[in-house]
Length: 79
Image 1 (cartoon, rainbow, N blue to C red):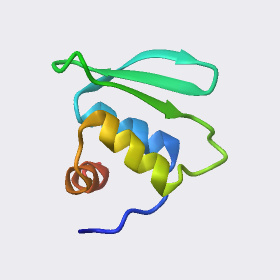
Image 2 (cartoon, rainbow, N blue to C red):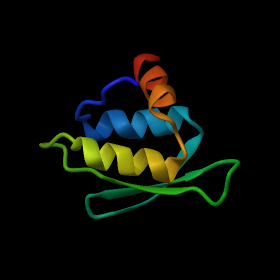
Image 3 (cartoon, one colour):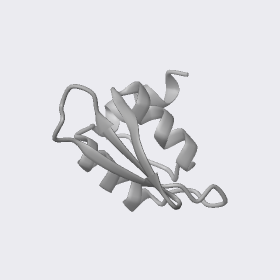
């Protein structure tokens, strides 16, 4: 299993957009995304641009988005 590293919030949002999510709302520094097809999937990404998202936050977002680590890495490299 590949090891995850901290990710910039902007990169995380781009990956989720590639995975079929769309920007639903933004409240302060938190971006809310929803999936276009799977309507039950809702993800919140903290957007503090000065800081990277820690690994435990990345894992939590992946769980919310129902994405595997391997799919995440493929989408991250697919620019």
